Length: 199
Length: 421
Image (cartoon, rainbow over all chains, first blue to last red; front, side, top):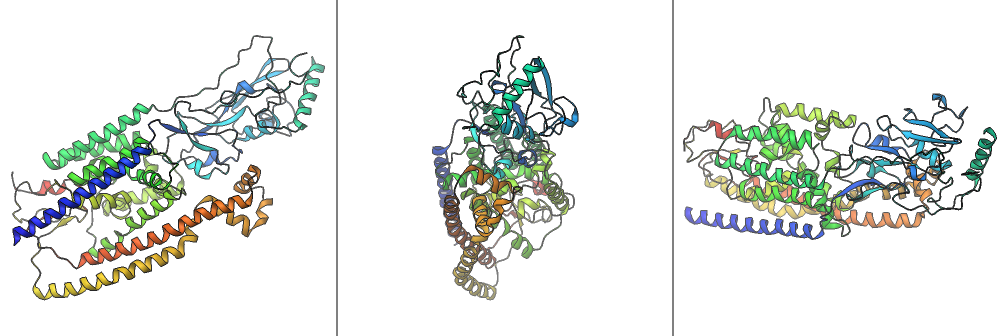
């Protein structure tokens, strides 16, 4: 009787194990049929971004993995830079009271009359998007946010993507891990204002 | 020069006021420089290479194999201990706790329910491989390959034994957690397992304040209640428990035959050792049979009640989805449209989507929640019923053996066994 009982239990064990094996295998096969072999990473689509400022605070890193980058390709090198200067700035100068950036991460370098180059010190940038807002509203939008892959932990679910009000963050292919304006979409050339570039 | 600058500025200003027809239009074209200025490129640091992710899978298989070897072949607690230190350092502190098998449940759930979602192969492998190992060798994953298990295991200080009723009661939480995680993942709402992982903040040395508090609290509780997350929260543990019960080569306390010396009786910090049981007397078996029948009959009732509660809570649960939340907010409080500080509403308005389409989208999601919630409720009823049912069966047991479902194969008990091979 005992032996019978044991063999019956063994039989149940074996058959359940076999069915579990098939179930896990089936799940694996189903998953594999949908799996992407190409790896993906989180990135911000700068054209969808509404500069809400959540990137600075919602990232799992205390200093966000999102930082502002400068797409020099589409920068107008303006003297009156909406991303650098406060809207009510006293002066178009580098004085701290004129700067929009809360951490003074942007430096303004004179190139030639009347152009200035703006360079972001990434170590200082906190990804608050204040300059992005300014540049997008008044300029070409060459300042824009990007997830920096040297800092991003590639979380299973991006904490910023979850709260992004404009659904600008999604996974993109690792082969092109950045969506940088100008490079990532060719800007159709508008008719240049006759005098602004050259006289 | 000054005059020239002024002209430029005026033109710049004119361009500002002029309406911009598209986002991709440059208001101020890039100048051509006379001074030979070379435009720098924005730096683009490369992400971690894909090969490294597959290396993680390789490490997982290696660690699992070693843990299995130490638990079953070598019977070495020391080996498992070293392995869990390695896992804590590699998967925990070095890899920052992501990707992990526990969180991969959600990726798999999303794959099953969203045909547009494509799971990453690494996440799939992290989900499948430990289950397969467990099916044959027991929960050696928990013993040595899980960073969450490792951090808790290494901090067990003075474990207390938890009464059966409390253990079984709290043991229902993982089922609910698993069900909710699948529901939220399947509806594309949220990955709650990742979001409320109490230890990931410690691995990263960085998290929201509330999560740090939770993580430290869990570690402190874990000094006395061994592996509190594994036993009373871990949703992956539910799946491992099921598979481990049917594992073929589960580790044993004794290398040959048990001499009932009782030395191992209190060695398990997780109360996962089945102690010898006499065959119950006939009268007790009679009353157990009655209880068994009663419980069997009330299972449908429990499931019905669960389904009802689930159905009733679907409206509440669905509010976790941002679309449902936003649609409800806009309908109930249309005045939020004027609130410029409400980022979600402002982003929605500026995107130019109509309220109708949003409501439609929200309706689809709520319908999914409706189905999912009652199934979840019925499932919880079934779980409660079956665990009641399990209380009425007493299996005759001659020796001390691990409770295969709950045993983490940590190997502590093996050190106490005096029997030589």
